[in-house]
Amino acid sequence: MVTTGVRLVVLGLFLAFGCVSSIPAAPTNVKKPSQDSPLPGKPTVPPQMSGQVQKCQVQDYERVPCGEPGIKAARCNTINCCFDGQQCYYGKTVTVQCTLDGQFVLVAARDTTLPRISLESISMLGGNAGPCSPVDSNAAFAIYQFPVTACGTTMMVKGGYVIYENRMVSSYEVGVGPRGSITRDTHYELYFQCKYSGVGLAALSIDPAANVDPLPLVASGPLQVELRLGKGQCVTKGCVAEQIAYNSYYSALDYPVTKVLREPVYVEVRIVGRTDPNIVLVLGSCWATAAPNPYSLPQWDLLVNGCPYKDDRYLTRLIPVNGTSRLAYPTHYRRFVLKMFTFVDKTSMAPLQETLYIHCSTAVCLPNALDSCEPMCTRTRRDVSAAEETAAPTGIASSGEVIFTQA
Image (tube, rainbow, N blue to C red):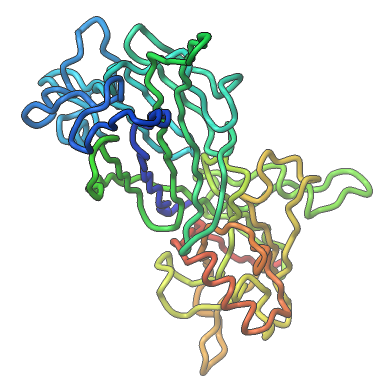
């Protein structure tokens, strides 16, 4: 079985709204400090040395490894970490990363600001309990990892992207006296987001104190989409063939698969390795060829814009995948059944080949008010346009060789 990797954009834009400090109103007749005068107690980012020296001055015993084992210097720098020639580790800042399986990874350093952040006081929009609590920590760092759909994350669709946004905030302790209140803690806020679309992976970040546009840091990662054929067969009275068919599948060692003409061929296309319940797999077109190349001729349409090809006497039939399918993420699957056929010569009408290869173009979609991401085979041109804005084609998944035989 041939599986085509489809790319998913993950664009993490880490927007720092600065280190916020509340300054009480000055009493009457008291001279206010000029704008150039530093306010005592206002949290600041530590002074910068050359390059990343200040950020990367982390004691050996406090270091938290960053990236996969054996990571190289270039890749380490790309994900906004520090490299000392041997080890990749997190620096003295707040580092946010978006993983390919839909997770936020946030590593907060105590020394990101002066005075230091109180690591024990950090929380997300959804609080600091359950998945929103640190997965690990030491005296200098707190490490968080949680799904992009958890911890109060907000989700929106904008400009063709699915955007997940959350906020990290450190609280501060207030001392209340008879004639005033004070705090000696830093208040820190960081908004961060992951953007999902259909083409590649990129990550952006900025220093919380920098007042400049972030520079892009790019890395690639595939979103796998797999096409496979169901092989389950009814052996008991009253069973439903289209349900049993997807209980088991042909493996790579089973190909070529032999089918009798007009025998049902059960096709499934699915997203592999994703756990985001909000995304929906969408089929654009599905077609068959006589050769493995999806662009080779001859071709025969099976689905057009996700709907059965209307000029086929034996219409391809869509099979619903929903909560009754006993799948963890039903929206990650699409299923349909076709009747086995073979290509013939246009002139002589004699069979040309004994083989078929099935291909489908795929997209990842997020439901919205204009489009449910479900194929509506009587949809209007306006409906189709709305769907195209929501989900752009992302790649092609193909099956292995299927051979016909005379009954």
